[in-house]
Image (cartoon, rainbow, N blue to C red; front, side):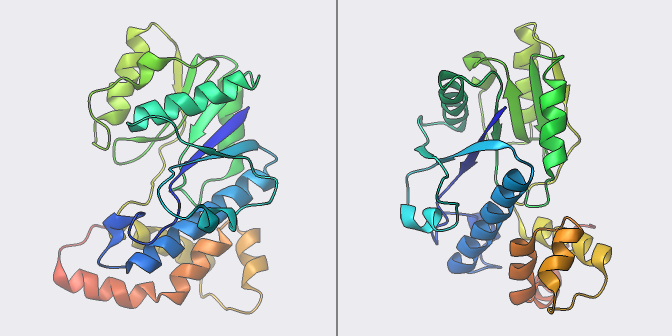
Length: 247
């Protein structure tokens, strides 16, 4: 199975903008860079074939320096998110892959086992989809590119997953869902991710951190960024200004 990893170029002001003003535009770009590096490390370590499909806005060099030299980079084609995902799938099938999936980059804690589980589920279903807790989805895989699946009315809203399932069922196709995952769109999401990791690991020590992080399946690049930005202090400032969600 080929994974089409969909991403923006980590250009300040063009990526992770929902995290502003809690992060500066430069910090948003650095965070997104950390996500990309951790997602690629997961795919590499899991021996999963992938290609990176990127939005052409921004300096491509910012993206290239984050990736292994062998990585195939392809400009996303289409205007809507649905068109871009469909075209990435179609490109993978045109290359001869029997299974192709689209995956976002906002899940730095995702494990390769989830991707392999999806590949096995695809042996018995027409479509495998990975829902997110906000009503969207982070992953979709199939045996052939079906354009109608992506022709839903509105993207970026809490009904995207259910609208997509309705399309799949309307086409009389079988489907299976992966476990729900949290993607990172808002500062509350980012802090909850930090809390999950911090509670899992206990007190973090910088010496030997990389080995410790890898052994506990926690992405090194993202965790390092969160430590450097002092997320606890920023969360306290954020919490004083508004009601915050429970992690």
